[in-house]
Length: 295
Ligand code: SF4
Ligand code: SF4
Image 1 (tube, helix red, strand yellow):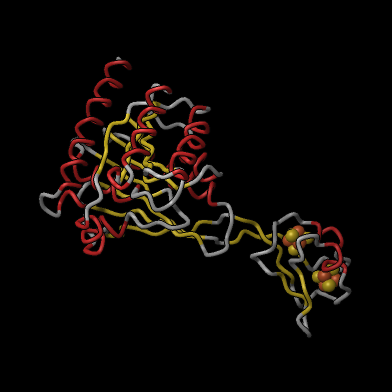
Image 2 (image 1 turned 90 degrees about the vertical axis):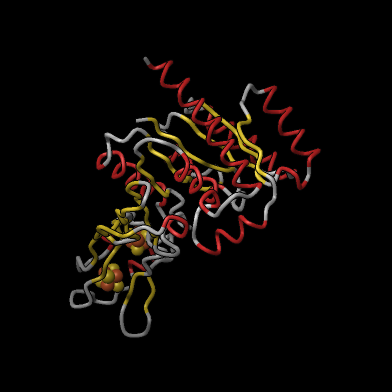
């Protein structure tokens, strides 16, 4: 199994649109994961049928037993995250503020506080026309999205370990969810766009990726909106020896296909679909090289 993550330095570059189209195009058996757990939307383009849903117990949180609490206020006074407050008749924990540090359990004279697992999301294992998809939803405001990303990847790799390809729609940015996404992957495809911030974010995300040593590839989406910056991106990638394997033009058909919930490559011939087909062919070549190197 070759593991490929499609990522971007920032949101809104068209990463998910490209992932869905590659899922549609790439040959061989495939398992998919949506690791953009804070804003998962690969499912909007792949129409998954959910096979099973599991709770994700991401954080531990303090719970006060009101029958034991003597309302001394020690827990509130010692909680540095301001997660405990008296709402008039009882002390309560705000789970969105609680970091599970357990200080309140030590200071409570009545042994009224315990630390318990808390559900912070759910993970779905689904069927699509192109293989199984593991996707997830994080409760709004809940942390630990890196842990949920890890759980999503682990489920996909364990359940569908015999697939030829593991295709991941990664999160934007360079934080914990990205690091969790790219750790252990073989190839990352960074989707960028021709803007000053696009180039800046591309450089940042490449710097992070290099620490994990995957093969790095780049695609420029809406390349024709600012061709001089596309040229700058190409030159920078040449200097860094990073292959630019696709340039996709701005195309209103992309917006239409997203609105219709289908990959752009299955929405008929269009300039964007043709460019992504070229991107898919180039990626296949890179996969072939990668397989040959591993022999
Ligand atoms: S576990 Fe820590 S953060 Fe949570 S309520 Fe207790 S003292 Fe505050
Ligand atoms: S420290 Fe314990 S007894 Fe005191 S208010 Fe908090 S939960 Fe209640």
